[in-house]
Length: 384
Image (cartoon, rainbow, N blue to C red; front, side, top):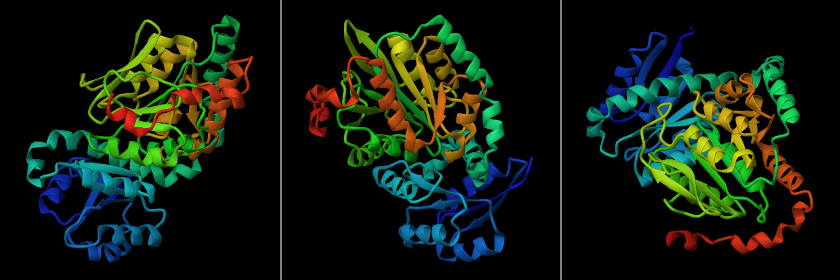
């Protein structure tokens, strides 16, 4: 396994010690530290790290300015920002993600609490470093490899056509992503029309505070109403619900009414919210009338859920691994044949609209004007 050189840039000694202590247990990781952000640019030049862990929040120096300088001077260098689990931390992290950071490592609001959060960091940190290192070669995905891994997918598609199990119009779109997912999700939602005729529920591996801030940012760029999911919310066309950090989000039904169940069940695939939990529940309720979308990410959360949707006759689209910030999750789903096709993030919205229009044979996409009746303003969701 190739060595990964990591530079930790953080002014807090407790944070540096906690991160170094965990990464030193990894046999293929070499760690250097920098406690003065104003000197980190020179240190990057001298040490040539593969990944930077950078504290975006700061009281002593301008973290945003230094972050932007690093992005300009070293555009191909993956930066994982360190940010607290707080509203201010969420705003800082989302700023960094919009401007080129590959992921976020969250720490307690009070750095002294790091002594009690070692287990959380030990689970998350090595995976984050591995995923960040993978982004270095994200633009060199072997196209032959991608085509080769779709053999199972083509066999599964032919099998489905023979069984003829896809009936009726699409009732729900579910989306799951991990590292690099927020950028792809924003691209998809901003390109969907305001009269998109089915509800959308999405999972992004983010902690508390971060999903609320992400929903606000997505809402500003989308023609749809985007909000953090709340327990009992009814699924309506023209709405996008984002699973809240630290909570699973499932689909339930009472008569003809589909609604959300938000709860703190056990983690799945080391994740809460979990993509698998959402996808399984969607397939259980709506069967072949579900469209699932897998975005950029690391790990395996979403693989089992995609299989359940396909087994029920639903449709799975995957972000093209070549366009994904981290291709691990998209490639895993493709290799297992649990997809119908893969596209760049910029094309997925168009494919969703085309497929839903196709399943509603008597209608054209442009004629879905009546669904505007269900579009809600953000104030509506505050009272749900």
